[in-house]
Length: 191
Image (cartoon, rainbow, N blue to C red; front, side):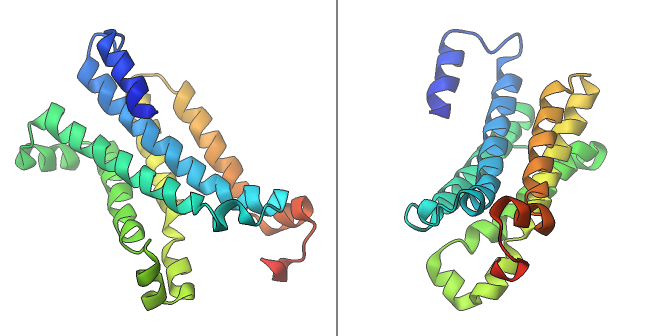
């Protein structure tokens, strides 16, 4: 669906005065959307009691892979449209623009999560080590929101990044044991 929407915007010339920059931003927003949807699965499952929400559909896994796919496309679009794949210019840009460096760090933290998302790797790592590694998603989300906020700040357009930051704060707050206990009416040892 995101590609259909982007295709319609591109085809109807509604991406604004700088369509390539708008395309980079739209792809980045979809990466962020999928990342936040991934973080929504566990609280939704715990609060509603829908135990099969993630088990049968592997929804969190699929959403996480989509988040990585769109993050990769966001990075590739940036490299292509802004630097024509000139890595020297890209590295110089990273060293002079901290918001880009933050976004790159978030992307690099996604790599081990994506690599270890297959069931064979999970078995090799062991469930506990795999779970600890996948706690990186919180830092990835914070870094991604920071990247978005910092870039938007330079354009004085903070409305959307603040909404995304609020959604992330809410999703992280839902993981706070006293609040989660109250919402699910469970004891802490049941998590």
